[in-house]
Length: 477
Ligand code: HEC
Ligand code: HEC
Ligand code: HEC
Ligand code: HEC
Ligand code: HEC
Figure 1 (tube, rainbow, N blue to C red):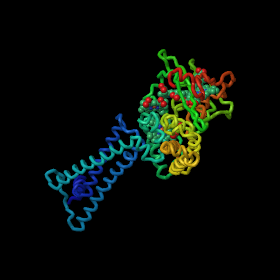
Figure 2 (figure 1 turned 60 degrees about the vertical axis):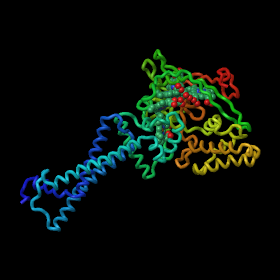
Figure 3 (figure 1 turned 30 degrees about the vertical axis):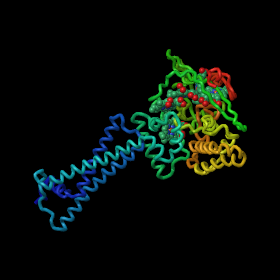
Figure 4 (figure 1 turned 180 degrees about the vertical axis):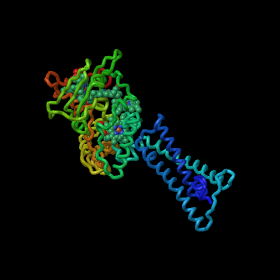
């Protein structure tokens, strides 16, 4: 009897015979196809450039495909057991199982079925996974599929990196960055499902070092030299008086002779600091590596001694922390909108009324939109009926622009409001440069402090002047 044969007769021949049923064959197809696709992803991950570094791709590669693989593995024995029971009940269980050979038509048909099923599964599952991975790499996925990213997506679209994928800045290059991102992505998905994600989401200190992101596109040594920054501000009077400030920033860089100068040149890889809060706003300890290799330490006179904490080498992100997502102050965003005419500066008190409306507190963006629009229109309807009659369409357009300003800066559902995310490229609205350059960070012997001379960073050519002479000289007015 068959029971006395070797492994081939006792296991393989009965297995193949009994597996010749739809359930098992589909199982074989699923398992082989998902295994092939998985191997493909792994090969790309390990050897390939162009593999996806998106942490959420883990959903497919680490969850969906393995699940299909296991499902296939379960279907195979399930089909075998069902067929065996059916044959036994019918008394049709063979005493000797047929040999495995292509001459046997039953075996041949089963083999063809498996090959076709594998091929079809491969095409369908493979295309679906490939397309999902490609989709997950787009800013649309990071920014829109996940509503908690709405604030960053909104602020990102109006900034110079609106064509740069989120993953370029949020995932360090190389294998460690890839693994860190996968772990982090999985944690975020769990937080999202359990609704335990933080509101607002803060990232300071968690974004990978600029050396693995920004410098892929930016040359850190590029010589910028002096840069003229012109800003326009409007006042609260009836005619919204406009004034201009002209600042000549000494950005510097590395010149042709390799000499470092200015704001960029002063910090490049030479400054270390310790921050004691999670947004890097309080910096009690700073050290500078001098040209001769020695270091100079500066400690804030407000610091509680001794200062403990992780040291961080200052890089691009310590100044350009809002390069992709600038949440403006209400004053700055309104000034910009008025300069572009989106909020019409010819409407009396547009600045004063507009600012009060966007700064007010609302429970949701929907409430803000309706109250800002109706509030602005009512102001003119009730207090400046003549203006309302003449300029109703400008008033309506300006009201919409005001609510749009609110919608890209304030997200009540994420507890993100004006000022939640400080901008470090500054010292007027946020501590920014003055986290260190406050004149209060001194060496131990008190002989030196971090420079806070206004002219070391910029020449203030004009501050809040109605008609700065320099602009006229440059032919810009
Ligand atoms: C040019 C680089 C860059 C790109 C592109 C970028 N980010 Fe960021 N992102 C940053 C930096 C730098 C921070 C840290 C801000 C800080 O430390 O204050 C940040 C912070 C964040 C935060 C934390 C909250 C906050 O605003 O500080 C989230 C969430 C975020 N980014 C999501 C995204 C999403 C989603 C995209 C794509 C739509 C994206 N980022 C694209 C550089 C970038
Ligand atoms: C994938 C390439 C890429 C990466 C990564 C990238 N940038 Fe940029 N960045 C650009 C390009 C391109 C521009 C110029 C945009 C333009 O002028 O339209 C730019 C512009 C800028 C500007 C000038 C903005 C302005 O207002 O003129 C700053 C500052 C900047 N990037 C900083 C950063 C920082 C900081 C990081 C890392 C967190 C970073 N970039 C990462 C491509 C990149
Ligand atoms: C100490 C602060 C600081 C650091 C560190 C820093 N920057 Fe800047 N950067 C500035 C300031 C200030 C400006 C001028 C601000 C403006 O354009 O309004 C500037 C301007 C720029 C510009 C615009 C130049 C132009 O031609 O308009 C780019 C691009 C830029 N930085 C990239 C970088 C990159 C990349 C790094 C890291 C390698 C970096 N910065 C590090 C402060 C810094
Ligand atoms: C983490 C601390 C820190 C921050 C933040 C910081 N700096 Fe500095 N900066 C230093 C240190 C330390 C030095 C070297 C000591 C010195 O020369 O006074 C320095 C030097 C400089 C110098 C050269 C000064 C000189 O005497 O030649 C300039 C210019 C400068 N920083 C501009 C800026 C600007 C602009 C910002 C904000 C966008 C900024 N720094 C933010 C720590 C910092
Ligand atoms: C460590 C560098 C640094 C020092 C020191 C410094 N500033 Fe600035 N300041 C900046 C930077 C960077 C900006 C540009 C911010 C921007 O691009 O909007 C700026 C912008 C300004 C502006 C323009 C604001 C606007 O309307 O755009 C004024 C005014 C100003 N600084 C005043 C001063 C005065 C007064 C001092 C001396 C007490 C001083 N700053 C010292 C770095 C510095």
